[in-house]
Length: 560
Figure 1 (cartoon, rainbow, N blue to C red):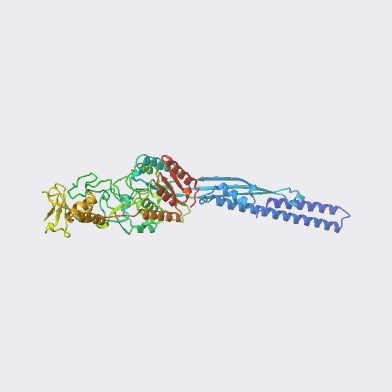
Figure 2 (figure 1 turned 120 degrees about the horizontal axis):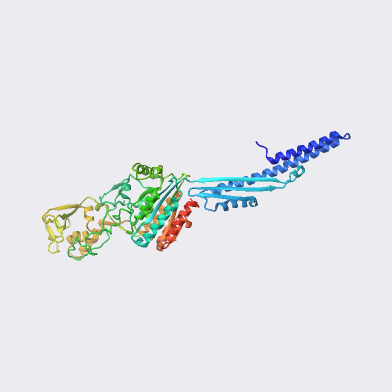
């Protein structure tokens, strides 16, 4: 062990004093044992005093070094949400050593923080002045670093119809600026960003939907929403073996004329029968699909530019898929997607384990609305053969009813609502205008007609015998063919379940209420990691909100 400079100097001083007294004694012919004893006694006092001074020096040095070590370790922690300099100062203040702290230097970036501190204390000796030591110098220096090398970000973005116009434009500008700022210093491509656009549903895209056990495939291009049961919200991940029926591409909301007369299947008016492509809750929009995590900012910003506003609002589904794409159980999914070239190979091993100290997970969820319940086609009417036929030449419909036929039908089982000048006709065979007729699947039916038109023209008018029974058949048929996916109250609850699961596992959840009503604002606030992670924005202020989030992430002043 190297001798401390203070001890070395003190020992040299004591040794010199002893030699001086010894020489005097040997030269003094009158020296005696009494004088020699006094010299020894004085030396003993000096050595004892020196030992006391050295003990005081070591106590001060130890206290100073331990305090500076503890303070920089705490300040450098990436889970520390206080100012690092204030943390170091607070440690020294509580130890009664603040006057000795000279300098604190903090260096931090997107994924690291380094804290260096220097301190210096002077100690006045009690006895060492006798050997020429007027002050003890007590220096201390320490440095601590914590570094996160991998960051996973999922943007959960509202693209419902109320986001149209300047709102969606402002969102695109803000989100693209966010990407630029977060990725600015990511030379090693350690930061990945995925996008989950949502309206009433979340359109997974064909690639991602193909990774789940989807049933009731309807075959409509660019329509890849899964009809999730409420039970999925009790778990943080998404099983890839459980069967999930696809959400039907159907018009379940528009009404139709309920007069006891025929309305053409091709009528596109509000009281007509033609399916409106803007009505389905899972929209046929190729650009509004889940975008798997990427590292190239140009690619990510291109995805953002393609977003289009349409449909209702289901924040809970957006958040559910956002969490599903960031939780560690998705690692096998990522491996497959990397192997197929859909995710960069540099993202191998993601999503990282919750306990991985070298990674950070972030979800940014924004909305301009609140939950709106929506309807779904029930499973029995999603796929498979229907009892409905369509004439090849004129496109008119007929339906076969093997039961519940009124007496006027006799033995005829096929109802053609357009016949007899719109009064309808029971027939022995499906209507055929001369070029044949085709029995339709349910997905064929919904690709052309509204649920309400089918329920009225092919069921209520065929099986009802008066206005009351027709109304009953109409309502009952619609209630069998469609159902509410979830109530607004249940959607609020399932959203908070996903938020709690994410936050409970260390995901940093940032929330933005963008010109949102009170209920939606409250839901986003509750979902956020804390009020410091929650932003209210109007107009172009959304850019400031995204900028603040990017700054917070970059500085890593985070509470995980």
